[in-house]
Length: 327
Image (cartoon, rainbow, N blue to C red; front, side, top):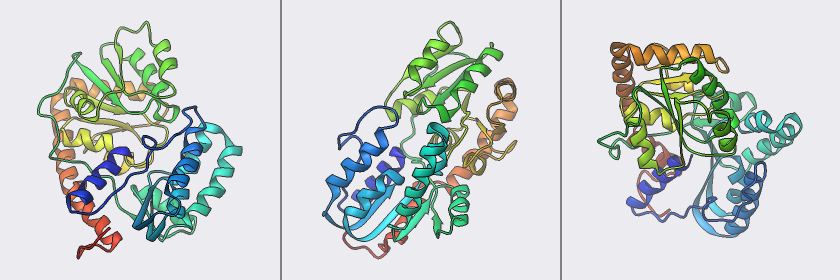
């Protein structure tokens, strides 16, 4: 989500529009599991309250109160997944039900609602909301020329270390695929527990949190990117791997199935199935012809459908700015 917002803001600013980002890096939040999103919802609301702007564009449900508080001519809400279901997965049914009520309320505050995956669009359509599809995008001009390889062969995961990303399954797969080496890039609430669990595994290394460009270098230097999520929107990291011509193995959930066509642009496996995941990773690493075929077709599709030039024009139409004008 952060990469998506930064990419959109940079292009707007480059076209001469005034852009201000309210995020967790510019407002105080409580960095405790379960309190980060609620505290951001409150702090961003207080920061934005009463400010005048042409367009207020909120990304994900916790940003909706700030969108509502802004004095904007147009209010846009972008959904990066099925928010209340994710909360239910992480925090249980009671909290999920409360968030589901808030989610429905928040969608009513927006003049236009968009979603980054077709699966999310379908979910919210069934809830009775008119949601437009605008996917995540990848910047094809800022990709690294050389990759970083620590192991050979090298399987890389890049993302937030949290329950829904399926890293428990990945560690089980790493135990079964002892001939593969796993590089885990990123950090999050599960980081310490996962490190402790894998401390005796020779084929797993945690890199920690790195810059976006360095994360791309680790992807570029790897034989395969893995995303074993239990729930997922439209993953930017998959798009980036496709753009770098690195083959992808992902779970058959959410927006993953929109990006990865099994056997054509990557391999899909069932969530929470370490045997199937290990088999798919070993298959791609051992079959160079398959890996090249998958990555070539994936690259062709990302260029045709998910470039920032294409996606940016869609946002300009949403904003009503195709003919220019202040924002």
